[in-house]
Each structure stands twice: as structure tokens, then as C-alpha cells.
Image (tube, rainbow, N blue to C red):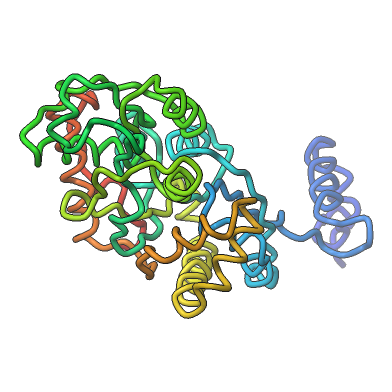
Length: 330
């Protein structure tokens, strides 16, 4: 005869002797896993928060193709526009965005400030998309003429490195010019009023200044800086969502490929998306070099050179190792 006190034979009796807290915890755990509709709760939906500037990502946003590619993975996409790379990377550092596009220099300053960024992709070099402008009637005829002059640019942006290397190429030091740190819109206003003597800027702001202000290009970055466009994420996001980032880079490269074969149509589409005259976007598109791919060690070596240059000038407080910002799968 079985012992009537054998709890294995009487599970209900055994349960009655379990601590009340343990029973309650089990019940709450089951209830939490059960959805209102009577099905097991799904894992929280993933999201890709994109911070972008005016340009290729604007086309990607307008077309909605990234959303379509990511929908089967349960990934929602949100978009926030920024006027320059440094503020984008500040947003990454405080956890407001997961992915974005930026020039060469901003990631260097961000890494030096401790931002947890990793490179997710890079364009081919695009040196024609940044330039040093002077007013059309300016007496400045060469880079050497900039000595002692007021030069406007966005601090920590791609043109910051361009300026350093351009001055060096023409026998000048960084301290030989008066740097005036201004965001693009403010720099344009100062340039128009004559409050600065020259302005370093990138497209499409560059093309807009050429077409609407008849600004004269004193020099672009050919032979000075590669001016790659970079795509970035946080290390945590890249580690947890490599599939999402891979698809994002693929979709950006698809935009590149399409624009390279449809420049007139792309200029028209960009004009609508950016709210610019087609004459401006045509100039912009005509000088773009196309191609976006994952970051390699050779590309990181280019960024290392930029970091070393900024450190030598004491523009960043410490020497950096760019491998610390390498893609998670490199």
C-alpha cells in the first residue's frame, strides 16, 4: 500500500506545501508569458533608428525600400534628420539613434570622446564632394592667400580634416588661418554677408552655394583627402543586429547603383526630396563617385591617419586605435 503522505503520488498536496511566494512567482511568470489573445507573447519588435543628413539616405527614406526589406524580420525603421555629422554622433552616444551616415572626421572626434561607435560601411572616395569656397569677386586666388584669413567650417566635420591637409599641401599651418566654427546654415549666412573670407563645405550645400551665390571653388579635396562617406552604429546594436546592418548597407549600395545609371532621374528625385532646385542636385549628382561596401582594414588605416593627424595637432586629447571601432565581424 502506498504511503498516503507520499507527495509524488499527490502533486496537489505537494503544491499546497510549497512556499506561497514561490507559487505566486510561478503563476505570475506564466501569466506574463501569456498574451491577451491567448497566444505566447512574442519577443519585443526590433527597431532601426536612422539618423541621416541630406543626401543618399534621404533617397532611401523617401523610397521606403529599407522598410520593405526589414519588415519580414519584424524590424521597424524611424528617421531623424541632422545638419552635420558631429551632432549625429552625439545622438549615437546618448542612445538616440542606431545608424547613420557621416564624413571622415566626426567618427574620430566621437571615438576620442568615448562614443561606443563601430563602422558599418563606407563609400568609395568622393573628394569632389567637398571644397573650399570664396566669394566670386574675392581677391583670394590661391590657398596660400588664406594666411590670416577667416575661414568658416563645421568643427569636427569632414572638411575639418580637409582644411588641415589642404593648408599643409600649400605650405601653411593650421594656425595660419582664423577658424570660424559654424554649422552649414550659419556658415552660409556669414559667407553671404562677408563676415568670413572663405567657407569649407560639402554637397549638396556646396552645389547650392555655387549655383545660388556664384561662389568660386578655390580647391576641392582631390589629391588632399579621400572624403569617404561612412555608415556607423553602436557596438551593442551591431553585435545584436548584424543582419539589420547588412541589409541597410545593401540597400544604400542599391541606391548608389541606380543613381550611377540614372543620373537625370536621380537629380530630379533628390530635388523633390531635399527641396532644392534641380540645377543644384544635377551638379551634385554629376560629381558623385558610386559604391558602398563593408569597412576593411585598409579603410580603417585611412581613418587611423586622420586620427593621428588630429592628435598631433592636439585637436583630440589622446591617441586612438581605430581597430577599437572596427566592424564586429572584421
